[in-house]
Length: 329
Image 1 (tube, one colour):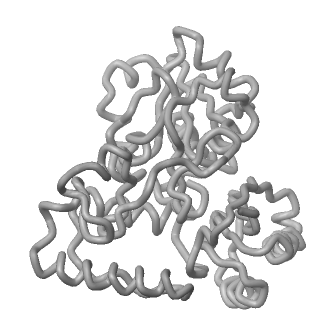
Image 2 (image 1 turned 30 degrees about the vertical axis):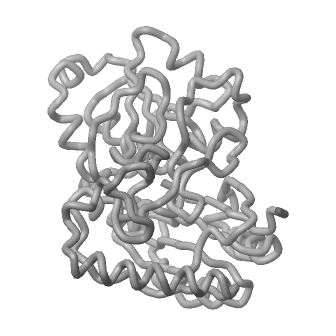
């Protein structure tokens, strides 16, 4: 099948006091070019992942770069045979990736960027503490060998976790390397450590996605797949779509083992949310899934709001993360 849809993941921290004025023009531009996905606008910059026909995606990128403040906007590309997104969202936010630390400014202080080609050499050194800054459900399906998993359900929990690491806080000379999906969360997490007085802080330039794009599998220290916030669910080396799927009830990434579980029913529940679903919930979700399947067999899209259900706590964090971090991280 031909990979007809171009996906572009982008972000830039830059002062945009007029960001609210961008919303309607961006919404109209994307819609006119058949481009879907999510773009977040805030005073501190822009964060987004968009997908669509190549000409349409490039038209949006060109429009953004016409503003001198975004002239150096970088993006990462991948291709898909099916649409990665079903909707377009252009949102105004307080932060383009939410950490909730007052006074934090990645445009002034940030960790040292490490290119993917140099990452293995850095994290292979025994005195380097390697921290995965992503949410627990992302780490579950893949991470770098030897990385520490903070076990957080939302990026906003990372500052508290770091504060609780007594050995780390006691020695500000500790060399710390951090990584995330596309690089944006590490801009803030390394800025936070620098603000706290840590001297040697590094992060993976371009994130896991750039590493998987550039580093050959035979040289890789990555294990598993990388979760992405779109219909691909996960990618592997070369940014090829992975084997993970998504629970359509709670949006938790599912492995083969999850799908073999007796608690898994496609479109209805999975091992992560089964206990939180009532019989009435399951009946409603089953009917929705039946309608989706009927539309698919008829060759028609079935795009509607998810059935309004109270998601389980961890799944709710997944959905919250999708709203705040989904464009690139």
